[in-house]
Image (cartoon, rainbow, N blue to C red; front, side, top):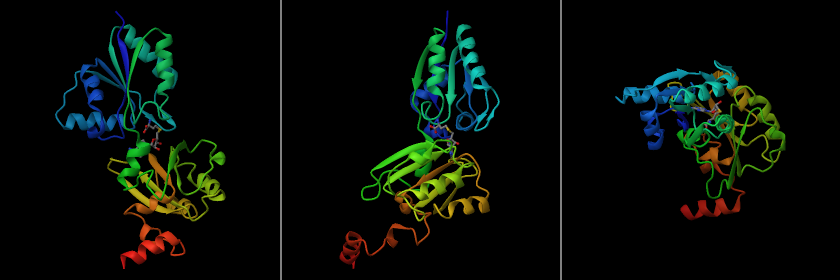
Length: 264
Ligand code: SAH
């Protein structure tokens, strides 16, 4: 009898942010094929909480640029295990469908005649900025957000500071991305936050502007994994320096001036 594959989103790395459905899938699994980013932290967190999983764990160790097992190998492994009759969980960081190649794994398994179910996860694109107190939309500050990778052609990204940009896998290309975005409508003074290792031991927040962030990243030795947020919503963060904070809004802004006057 053929087994099946569950593509499960592990969330950003904290076991508390795994879904209940995801936990049930892990408990029922014979084999867990896990990424390192996100997934490993969740498995360790569950073990620390006393959750005992009977499944064998295969670590395919995916970090940006360091694929212990290439994607073809992962695809083949999933199909091979399912054909052995195993109940396989493919545990992926964040949400399987956000820059996670989940769609490719799904298609490969289905083409091989293997049943696949998908359990969504909490993406780092939204949950990691929240750690720095940053909502991606906020009335009066941002009405939309776009999630892209540092490798994407961000040249074509339109919009101003009220259109939040979230960069995943964006550390290596941060200087270039900042320069590109600064040339557009957002401008060099647009606020930027970088949140490293969200929910992990190296969690750290750096706030600056498109003009300053590359130098700050170099100075502070900013490392992957990190989520970069660009836009006026960054000003809400308690990590924002006074000159960027919402309270320091330009008084030439009539609406803000009126609100400020009303509060006096
Ligand atoms: N599918 C994943 C994203 C995979 S791309 C998701 O939905 O979250 C990998 C990128 O996600 C990393 O380079 C980094 O930009 C981001 N990322 C994932 N987990 C993170 C974390 N705990 N802290 C900071 N960034 C994280």
